Length: 169
Length: 192
Image (spheres, rainbow over the protein chains, first blue to last red):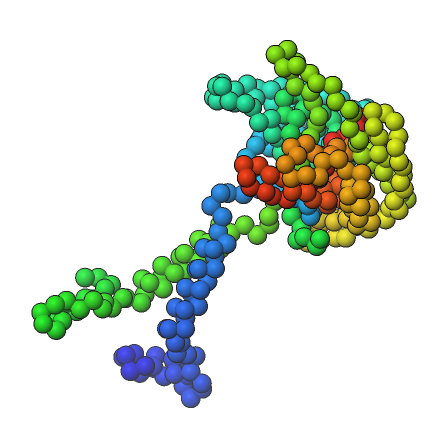
C-alpha cells in the first residue's frame, strides 16, 4: 500500500477508515488450482470434434448406444431434409399422402455422394453408412421413408443420432 | 531475459539450475488455456443407435449359394396403445407370441428432450433372446434379427425407445482376437 504515492488514493484504497477492499491471495494455492483445472480440462478434451445437432432438431435420448462415426449426416427438421447442411427435399408430400415413398432429391444427393466416394477411393468397399438426425416429434412414416430412401441410395447401414443417456443396466 | 531470471553465479563457477519464472505471463497462460478448453468443451455427448436396412447386395454369380435353414426373427409390434406384441417367426410361420404391457411414460429432460423408456419390454426381449436367440457365441459373425412394426403416426421418440429396448441384450463379439460387447439384435423396419 505504500507504493501508492497519492495520499487520497491510498486512503480511498485502504477504505478511509472502513475495511479495505483488497485481499491478499496465496499464489501457490491459486496456481495449484489453475493447474488442476487445466489438467482436468485437458483430460476431458476431445480433439476428434463433435458433430453438433442441427438447429431446431431435438434428438431423443437412448441408453444402449454406440460411438459416433464419420458419415454423411441427413437431418430432418420440421419439414426440411438436409444432407450435411445442403437442402435435399422436404417431407410434406409424405406427411400429406401418409404413404411410404422415396424422397427423390435426397436419393440423388446421397447417390452423388456415394459415386464421389467411389471415385476418391478406387478399389475400396463402400461402407454405406449414413447418420440420421431426426427431431423427436417427427412421424414414423417420415422416418421410414428417409430410412428407405437412404437404403436404396446405397446406404443400408443406417444410424440414428441420439443423446447419450447414462447406463442403468 | 524477460520473464525468466537465471542466476548465473553458481558455486564453483557453474550455473545454477534454478530459475525464477515471472508469475504474470504464467498466470496469463493458464487463464488462456482454461478459457480455450472451456470454450471448446463439449457438454452434450451425441451417440448413435444402429439399424440395418437389410438391402440385398448385387448378385454374386461367382459365389455358390448354400441353402440354409431360415432363421428365427423377432417381430416387435408397437401398434397398440396398451401393449407390445413380440412374435418369433421362422420363414413366415409364427412360433410364439407374447404380449408385453405398454406404459408410455414421457420424462422431460433438460432442453425439452423427452425420454421414453420401455423397461418391461427390454427385460422381456432380453429373456426371450436368452432362450430363443440363435447367435450367442462370440465367434458368430451373424446377429439375431429384430423387425419393428409401427404405425405411421408414431412419434420418433417412441421408435427410439423401442429400438433402445431391443438393443438391451448384449453378446460377446470377437474380431481379430479382441472381444467386445455388442447388441444381440440387428434392427430393421417392417415396410408395411
